[in-house]
Length: 195
Image (cartoon, rainbow, N blue to C red; front, side):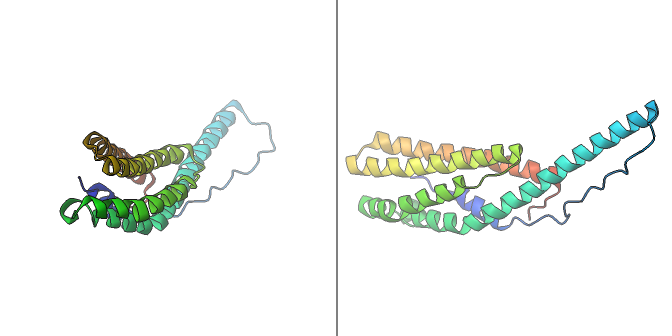
């Protein structure tokens, strides 16, 4: 069975995520004009309002992204622990089906189910961060389903089911890669450094 090295890379990656050096800037509003603005003033006022809206959206994205990464960092140690359990009975550490079966059944699957519940409880307000987070949720659920398929494959000694489980793990890695690419893109866009 393939190791979940990409998920371990995620954990290492998430541990290295730092908060932004730049704080979200507070926008100051323009003073209210009491005179009737001229057509030139109206254009300038419209441009200024647009600039404030764009700046506020960027600030919201920066803050939401920072908050999101902070929440993911809090969950990373648990995911690392669970994947460590899985790795301890697979790949080079594989000894037999019984050890793998009971590690999955007693430790990995219940812990990972709780982990996915905690991941799903994160509710970003910004639509772009929500979309980003949906990728992570899909990756976690795909991996969870692959673990449960492994249980079935071992119980029935069914290589086709084990192949499906491994394909699920591959799909989860692919989704996680997409998530990481988007994290990097938003990091670059917002200036929130990922160390």
